[in-house]
Image (cartoon, rainbow, N blue to C red):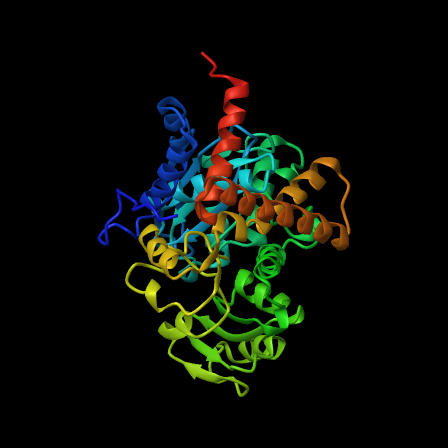
Length: 426
């Protein structure tokens, strides 16, 4: 089937994440024959919150930061999604990521809607004390919209379990009792889940193994290139290497290291810990970081940021399978090129859903007050990721669409069905 041209996209605006999400939504909605009213409901965010956050810095100055929280859909459960601290956060970006979370939760069929948050700041220039003040005031500003049954934040870019602990404590102090289920991605001692740090990378590995089975390939014959060596990329590299994949290259912000015979991932992680960089690794060759995505491989895992694969570079990809560990790494215009190259795409709203799935497990455990061992977490993650991969592929075959549009169609179908069952309150 020929790929449809995303009508609203051009090379000038293809990096706009909101337009990218809208382009995929439009095609899926069209193929599902959703009526105009339902499209309006699904397209619109339930709530967009913008707050100004005054913080007294360590030197006595007062700075005001802008923060956002977007709750895209509450049709299937409380909003769920990370909070990022970065200087380039925009409302459009947060809107798109919130919508993606709605579709992601629906694809893996967990009872959450989509949310996302962000604060415009550079955490690298803020002290721990300043970060804590910023986190607590941001939480207080949006606290009326948070809660285990309302909105459950999680870590994202430049946030971590320490930030989540501060958020949980701030909410709990206002509630006057401990509420562990208000956030996920917490420290284990405060109600975190085993298996959570590895979850997104493990999910990428699970769906990649499923794709290999579908395509008649074996892990030991499969060369993998991973872009990003943080939590997602680093864990994917470690787990895939241990499962027998040949991880031939890691591309990170400071360079790319390549070994066509396969990298020793634990040794590379030790090297980076000791030197602060993946470059200069004795068992690999340094390659220009811009070329990392285009090295020959069977599986490419972009696991860093959005918009790394565009219409300008998609033709240079030399992979058979693209497993999107990051959110929105591929633009709609790039999809047209990848379609022509016959690259098997495991879309982001499926590929990286392991993180939100284990976040769901954490939320369930907190609410039960009963915690699972890591084997149980991993077994249940395996079950959900395999079922979701198979459902997307089957949906695509049934409707004659590629995996990305199939994932969107499946997600929209599930959310629309929930809305129809609930009805429109008036």
